[in-house]
Image (cartoon, rainbow, N blue to C red):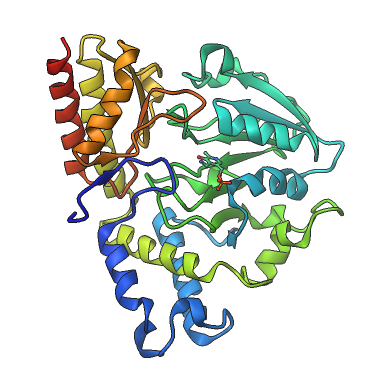
Amino acid sequence: GDRGVYNFAAGPATLPESVLLKAQSELYNYRGSGMSIMEMSHRGKEFDAVIKKAESDLRTLLSISDDFAVLFFQGGATTQFAAVPLNLCKLEDHTDYIVTGSWSDKAFKEAQKFCKPSLIWSGKAEKYTKIPSFDEIQQNPDAKYLHICGNETIHGVEFKDYPETKNQTSILVADMSSNFCSKPVDVSKFGVIYAGAQKNVGPSGVTIVIVRRDLMGDAQPITPVMLDYKTQSDHASLYNTPPCYGIYFCGLVFEDLLDQGGLEAVERKNAKKAGILYDAIDGSGGFYVCPVEKSVRSLMNVPFTLQKSELEKKFIEEAAKEGMVQLKGHRSVGGVRASIYNAMPLAGVEKLVAFLKDFQARHP
Ligand code: PMP
């Protein structure tokens, strides 16, 4: 784009240029209403149309059946770490957690306040570079649900398919914050999918929750009304004032993803971008190293280190000078992380790949 940078931030992250420009053009006077979306009643006809279209476009994108409610929440994915056990089980119930990185670890720890979660697999000893094989994990027969993080944003580890839950009554729950709408997902395999918007689909402040309808209506008595899936569903996400502008913006992104040909087309683009970047890392003769097991490498977040770690700071600074910003790895792991969400153009990744090669050639 003509803003002069490619933004590799992990989230909030780069958004589609066409969507930003459209939002800008509608910001001051939304479609002749004389008001901005930010200034309107959330119960007025304009916003009613906005939220309904956003939901319906998301349903089309992910082929979400009417067995599921699509809800817009606030509080980020972090709030869902609590909302999931509050809605799906009782304080004394057992639940299962697979921990493949920092985010699923946080979800597991939060759940300890609201149920009896078991850590049935952890990748910590291997520095979160793996996903377990599904027959290797021991699920508790009485677990109410199995929680996973579809894509670990910090460690770059992504589920490529999904475990089946052990018993009929148990359900699969996934935090898909950082790979939401990056590829098709068979929603019918899940009880709950939740995602903060600020990576692939919009600004922070909106959290999307897709929940099977028959799982709602039995929340723990202590559940704050704002976290009760049934309440939000009964009020079509308008129990209180929702994050109107964020929902509007997500709607523009959903429209754009449909215009691109839907999530199959989006996945093909993402696979191509990630492919050239991982190839460059693996083809560097060890100059750059991605520690994640190849079969589970994320299409969205590509973490890597430099064998000569003393060069990392210089790498990040020089890349920024060339217009490739926000490449610093998460403060907990260091190194470099290139987040290449839907809105990162192929040209941005090609430029980064060229820079990787050039930087290596200059530091023999
Ligand atoms: N889960 C994942 C996978 C994330 O990447 C993040 C944010 N980086 C969170 C949860 C927490 O999200 P929030 O800041 O919206 O609460």
